[in-house]
Length: 179
Image (cartoon, rainbow, N blue to C red; front, side, top):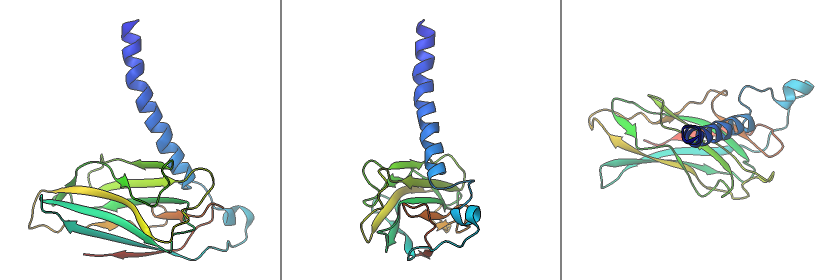
């Protein structure tokens, strides 16, 4: 009996994490078709959201990276992949939500891939952010080689960088990467 209880304790958190990851990906539309594909009509997308990826070296030798958003009041869901040079830096953990996602939002990130960190969130209760600007998420990176360029970027392919409003319509994205 003890052996089963121990196994259950390790499986339940893993299953919960897997379920949250699937919910976040489904909410962001990974692998699904958009309403315009289903109906054959073009969708009227809301005004675009401006994403700004920035990084700054900290006094403790770490690099702080954050993704900020402007014109984000209609944003309800976001899915992204933050890329980096694994010979220059290593993430110190998964991304943490900034001040824009709701406190009860489904937020997913992990640091297990060799050269990118996936980050996705979906607000609950059908409400968009409501705030015009702020920070979507932030990460800390350990410097492995100070001479190498960390090459922080977001994959801008439409399969990996997805922004939607609470009506599941795509929102145009304008991306700026500050060096």
